[in-house]
Image (cartoon, rainbow, N blue to C red):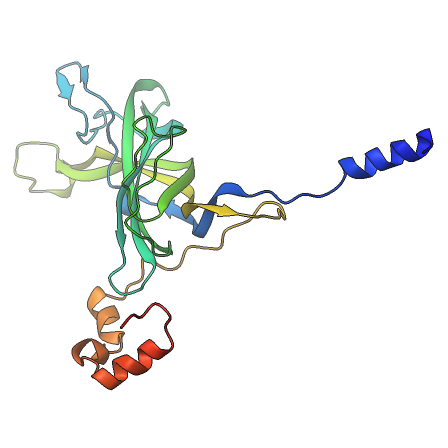
Length: 275
């Protein structure tokens, strides 16, 4: 064999394709959500941490009341600081589907200015949004998994698929909530005695989110690049749960036990049946 032939053979060997069995996190279902979170969904801005200002003491979670001379407010340094998966349970009506509840916690700075655009003060604030999604996660068995890669104790008894959530937020707007108030002690007998004072801060936040249900599986794969999830199905429909329930077909089979012959016919085509 010549040197040239030897080189060609080595090159062909190195480019030979192989099949590998891998443990992968297979995505069973996923969706994306793009939503403009208005003040109606978020509520008023709340204090992100305990703070003291002049004679006012704010506890974490208290509604932030603007200074009386505030004429404008802005939102800065927005951060999607926490994503909490608060619920994961099997859907009561659709086999293999799971109801997931996710809580998004936002942290940001609100800055108050007077009518001359002079700085008054700033506060660290927070808002929370909770969303629900129903995705297919397949069905599993009550098996336990042991590995020293991700679990120090080596044993996981978690049932059902795992949930993955990614999110990106953008600050869109902030405004003062104004409330009419009497400016004197005369009982507000005339319209001139009523003024509007700022009582809260309303913010608008844009949210992009991707929710996935996945399970670890053994598989052979071919990659075709990045997969883009479809839109989330309409989980915020105006249809009530009773309307949805009433639209389902009545499960007559559930209330009609099969006869012996029906069981035998069903069993004849199932190799798992035993006498």
